[in-house]
Structure formats: structure tokens, C-alpha cells
Amino acid sequence: MKKIIFLLLILFCLSGYVSPPIALLLGLLVANISGHPFLQYNYKITNVLLQFSVVGLGFGMNINAAMSAGKQGFLFTILSIFCTLILGFFLGKWLDIEKKTSHLISCGTAICGGSAIAAIAPVIESNEKQTSVALGVIFILNSIALFLFPAIGHWLEMSQQQFGLWCAIAIHDTSSVVGAANKYGAEALQIATTVKLARALWIVPVALLTSFIFKNRSTRIKIPYFIGLFILAMLMNTYVLQVALISPFLVTIAKIGLTLTLFLIGAGLNFTALKSVGFKPLFQGFLLWLFISTAALYSILYFT
Image (cartoon, rainbow, N blue to C red):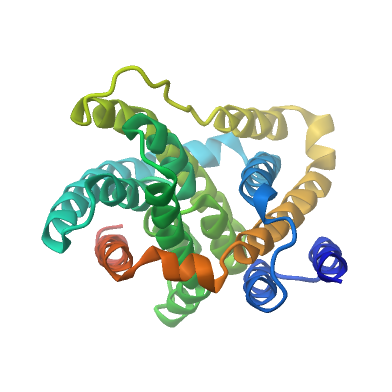
């Protein structure tokens, strides 16, 4: 019965009548009422589905506009990443959080959520508990951001450009960035996706720095190669007429894929997973998120 309910909800998310925030909420409900019958496959499926969806969204974007947005977010990206990592280090010391867990939370907040944690975890040779706690913190805050950010954006009457930039900097995971920006508007979606994926490339230098700090030079770093496919999709949409004609269809499929991704992320957050996080790591993640959100918001509103 659990499998039937779960599969019916997946079909509902694929129908196109469900928004990303509602899909996440449905996932949270099913996780804590009937349970996720395929939980062991959840992380791998969401990772692949998210990458597929992001590449698909590239078919709805113009490379010239994307490059302009990327340039604007470059300085914000550098400052926010390194300030967050430094603050995360001192918060971890202050709260007496285990060093590897603290570093994973800091990297997830600073760069791109779960993708950054997945890349950094083998570099520092973290165990399953440390990695799962960091992922739990990030996904809990992501879920809140998906509902909270669009409401704040409308309340402050932020422009599409301002909101897209704020999402890309202040929301951890790409899935929630795209979900929140998509709800706000098409221009916000383009800016948020481009800046966030440019930000994700910082996984490589941060991973190299991490390997030096943790004195581990033997582990290979996972590079987010799908970003190259996203850029290729934008190029094709901009310069290949035949592709531009079918781009709206591809983008629609990508948005449905994103909706399903958020449903699956929610379905992986049951009470057991939430309890295993613990107060101190969650508090560290919250303080880092509060810092990067407010600092980015102030900078965007008053300096752009």
C-alpha cells in the first residue's frame, strides 16, 4: 500500500499541476506518515534528476544574458563563500562541534548544499554519521527557504534581478534555489540558476584547500561536470534555431523534473533523520544561513 501511495504521488508531481513548494510539502508529509518505500535509492535518484532538470532549464536561457548575470554575481560569490567558511570555522569551535561535521556544514552553506557536501566528504574522509548530519542540516534549512524567500522577496518588493541574485547566494541547494526563483519569475530563474551554477564551480578550489587543511592529498575531487552540459544547452538555445523552437517543451519537462526532485528530497526527511541532526550542528547551520542571507540581502538592496 505504501508503494502505491508513493507512486501515485510521483504521478501527481509529474502531472504539471503541482508547484515545487507543494511537492516538497507532499514529500515531507509522506515521509512522516506512511514512509518512503524506496529510501535507499533516494539520494542517487534526486542527484541525477536534479542535474537533468538543471541542464533542461539551460534550454530556456540566453548565453549572453547568463554571462551578464554571472559577472554581476562574481564578487558576491567570492566574498560570501570565504566569509561563510571562516565564520563556520569559528562557530564550530565555539559550539564544540566535531571538526569534520562543522566543515561540511560550512561548505554546504557556502557553495551549493548537498552537492558540495558530497564532493567534500571523501576529501576529509568523513564517516556516514558526519555526512548525514551535515546533509540533514542543509536540507532542513533548504525546505524552510523554499517557502520563506519568495514571501520576503514580495514583501520587500524586490526586482526579479535582485531576488534571483539573492536566491543564488543565500539558499544552499540548487534545487531550492531554482524552485524559489521559478516561483518568483522567469528573469529571477535565469539569474538564480546561472549564478548558482557558477558558484558551484568553487567546489574545486575549496576541495583543494580542504585537502591541504585536512592533510589528505590522495582523494580525487568530484567535479560537477553537468554544469558544462548546462552551458552547452544555453549555447544551443541561443545560436541553433531548430533547438530554440523546441526549447519551451524541454524547459517544461525540466521544471516537472525539478518538482519531482523536491518531492523526493522532502520524502527523505523523516523525523528519525531530523532527530539525528542534533541541536548544535543545526544551530551552526542556522547562524551561518542567517549571516549569509542578511548580508547578501543588505548588499543587494543597497549596493546594486
